[in-house]
Structure formats: C-alpha cells, structure tokens
Image (spheres, rainbow, N blue to C red):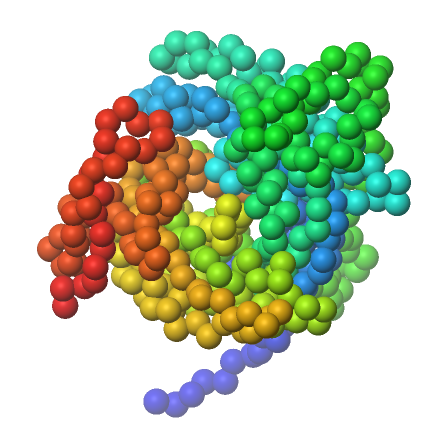
Length: 515
C-alpha cells in the first residue's frame, strides 16, 4: 500500500503529554483541527484541570511538587491532628435506600461538614494533608514562635463548637447526630515522595504519626484529646480533664475573645496562567507551560481517578453513587517504622526501598484494573488502601482483588530491606478484602480542598478484617469467599466479633489459586 504523506500537527511534539490530560472528544477535535480556536479550548481545559489537581493535593505537594518520578524526603516538625467522625455509617444507610436523591442528600451534609472543618483548619494555620474515609488528617507546621500546638488546639476547639451545626440531621430514617473525636500530638516525622513518573505517592513516616492516631483513638466524642507531649507545650494556656491512659482532654471554657482571632494564612487558590498571545505559537507556548505545572500534580492521582477528573472537568461535578466495590486494606509492616532508627544520612535507604515496594504493589493493582487510593498511617507500619469497582466496575472485581492480593503478598515476601541503624527488619503484611455497599463521591469543599473517596461501613469492616490477619495472611469476608470458591482455595476461620457489629461475622483465609 502506498503511504500518503500527511502534514505534521503543531501538537505532534507534545501529543504524548496531552493524551491522558484531555477528554476524548477534545483530544480528537484538536488533533483533526489544531486551529487557534481549538488550541484555546485545550488551554482553558488545562487551566481548569490545573485548579482541580491543586485542590486535590495538600500544600506539602501543591506548593513544591517534585518532578514525576523524583524520589525525595524531608524531616518535618510540628503538630499533627487526627479527627474521626461518629454517626456517618447510620447516615449513609438511611440515605442509601433513596438512590441518587439519597446520594445527593448525603453528599450535601458531608460536604457541609468537610467544608466547615477544612476552613477552620486553614484559617487556624493548618494544612489538610489527607482525607481518610470520613476522617481528616491535618498538620500545623512548627513556627519560629513555637506556637503550632496552640494553633492546633484552638482549631480543635473551634471545630468541636462547629459540630453543633450537625447535631440534628433529618435523613429519611429520622433524626441523626454527627459527632467528632480529635487527637493532637506534636513531634518530628519524615515526609517522602515515592513512586514512578506514572504514579507518585506522598507518605508520612515515623512514630509521631502513629502517636497522633493513637491520641485520636483514645479520645472522646465532642472533645479535643492531647498526647502528653502536646500537653506539655500548651499546659499553661488551657484547662484540662484527665483522659484515659494518661491523655489530656482540653476543657472548652474559653470565651470567644479568649479563643482569639484566626491566624492570617495565605490563600490556597492557585494563581491562573494567562495567555498573552493567542496565535498558534503563543497558544502552544501557553499549553506547554500549563503542562509543566499539571504533570507533577497528575502523577499523584491514580490513573482511573485522573481520567474521571479529566472527563468531568468541564462540568466540575462527579455524581455521587452507592455502588458495591471490593475493598482491600494492606498493612505494610517493618519498612515504614525504620525511619525512627536511621542514623544521619540513612534516610534515603528507607525511602528508596519504600518507593520500589510501592511501585511494584501499584503495578500489581493497576494491571488488574484496581485503584491504589493511598498509603496512610497505621498504629504499626503503613496502610495501603485499594479499591476494585470504583470508579470503574468489572463483573469479576473480587477475583481481580484476590489475584492482586496474592501477587502483593509475594512482592512483600521478596523485598530485601536495607540495614539502617545496624538493624535489618523483617518485612511482612496483613491483608483484608471485603465487598459491599459504599458511598462513592467527590468529598470536601466543592470548589476547594477535596478528593474522590469511597466511604462507609464496608471500608471500615475491611480495615478490621486486615487487623485480624496474622503475618502474611489474607483474610476475606463471606461474600468474597462465595465469589472466589470456584477458582481459589480458601479456608474457614470461623466467626469473629467486629467493632460496631451485633452479630459475629464468618471469615475465611485466602490460600491461593486452584490453578
């Protein structure tokens, strides 16, 4: 066949960079018609996407994002805050029977809650690092005045006062109440950007993170709970009640004047790029500059979620839903704890090893159509949260999850850990898999800090199944076992009592593939 010469598109040099950042219809249109009008549409789309990705990442990333694939680390000092929301599961269940109307109603309540809490954190001098289900994780950086813990405590008191707005919610099933626990701890921890140019992740490592989570879990609904280290920093500024296990509960006996004004903090909103020349050359230059700021942020978003954001950018709306995803939790143990034992200069050994492990685990998930949502804190090690069936569902999501879990277990078993501080740790994992109803939505501030998330009791149960697992064991729920029994070897482990459940739940161990 004779080859017909074609004119080169002005986009040829950057086509591969645009391929995954443009919606399908815009990509096709500009490729066949690279006119100034179409190039301007590309620029405007990228500007919108830039703002979305900026809102999807914490300031630790958005204000200084690494080049995709650049592994880096930094010690941070300051005060960490964890929150936990009580009452969300009942609220979700009450709305789930109403379909899309219930999803919209639930999202309205949830985003009102998140928006108010995020605003208080930001105005008080903090930065929201991540959403973890219905929980929040915030950081108040250490300042020259060493007042970061005071800022965090004042923010916590303001947040608890704001919870009165959510004390009487009228869902379809009757009046419900949301309550919140807050835990605050101060210390030093390591932040690291790990992964590959295709998929990066921002992780926090060290006992300070675990201590902050432990402080929240030992707290009380409606109160601000402090670790002893945080208490020592602010003990002369507030009154306290004795909490359990030597923790301290802040007494909110302050007047509005005593609580003080908000801190003055810079706005989060990303400055917009401006086109100065609207000819083809000027537009191409503007698009390339936009790509330079988008690509580092895009690498922190899982590919299926990034595609969802790209395709919905024009509407700036992702409809909430109640699907039944398959959820996997992995507790990755041994490597994350090493940072507290490193000698000066050994940090990079740990970070590089974690980066390799993350890249391989993410590949095992992506290959099978899943989403590695995040690496987050745990009382030991780090938790890796994975979804199959959200945002993209398959007919065999439990099978895909099982295959991924078995592959990940082998990856973890084959990790050669570095020797730091004279110690070479044992690297292990615990894995839990479950399937059930969940609330899937873009949660947070509708035009501010937010992210695509999967929430609900199914997620909570999965985390508890993971906690029941022994070293390198994969525990699955009865629903998952029923979907796997024809092609995978499983073994009954009897029934277990799980927090928040009146009846014991049958659980099984995933042994391997029958093939």
